[in-house]
Image (cartoon, rainbow, N blue to C red; front, side, top):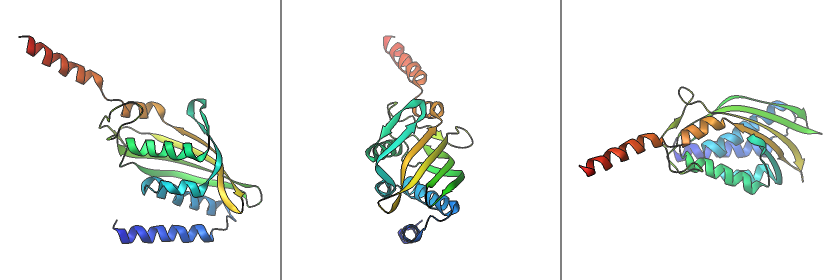
Length: 189
C-alpha cells in the first residue's frame, strides 16, 4: 500500500467516524473494526485518545485491572515494540445495544507477527505468531457510551493467549546454553 492509498483509507475512516450515528449495532461493529485496524495494523496509536475515556477501566487476564487511557497506550506500544510487524486478522466482531443506553461490542481475532523487539520476557526470540503454527487469539469486549456528546469506550475486557505469547517471546535458552557449553569445552582443550 502506497502513501496515497494510506491517506485515502484514513480519510474514508475519518469520514465514517464523523458521520456514524451509532443507530445500529452493525454501525458500531463496523466503526470499531475500522478503528482496531487503524490502531494496530496501521500503527495509529494516537487514535486511542479519540476512542477511550480518560478514566477507562480495562480488565485483563489474570484479574489485572487498569484505569486510564495512558495504560491503554503504554500496553499498545509495548506489544507493538515486541512485534513491529504485528497484524490482526478478525475472526468475528459484533455489537448489541441502542443509542440511549450505549453498546457492547465484542471481537475475536488472531495475531500475526515476528518477535523482533524486546518485551517483558527479554530480548527478541525471532519466533512468529501465526494462525498455522503458533496461534494467539485475542478476545475483547467493550462498553461504548456517549461521553460529552462523543461515543467512547468506557470499559474493556481483554484476554489474549498468554501461554502462547510467553512461548513466542521467550528465547530458547537451552540452545544457547548448549552452544555456550560447547564453546567453553573447546577452549579447555
